[in-house]
Length: 143
Image (cartoon, rainbow, N blue to C red):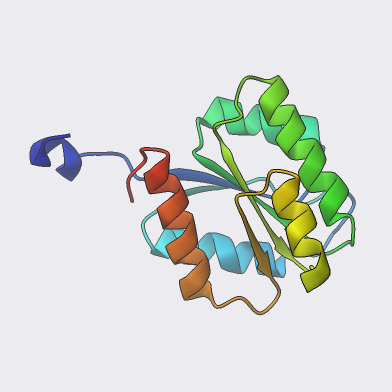
């Protein structure tokens, strides 16, 4: 891409989603704001979203990355279902990351399920932004 086109390139679009019955969204809102402040275009779904709706929104909004915020303990199942639903919709190129209350022992399970990155509670926002930027740049999106 030439420098002129880069100057007018759209920011990378990311979707922050709260799947399942978890009603706590403070962390998701903090992450959404940090990403927005770093130059991303952020779409936030709100709480209690169905996987099918998250995938539909991801497709409609043409996002490069879906971030799942999960505190309910169902992170492995919800991440697996999200990755599988994106692949079934021929959108397996959309990176899925997951954050929230995630035991270290579950990180390898989430990566094996198809998560591109995992951000347990306490991950510094700078590290999260850096990793999301790397994933979206890998997908050809700019920030």
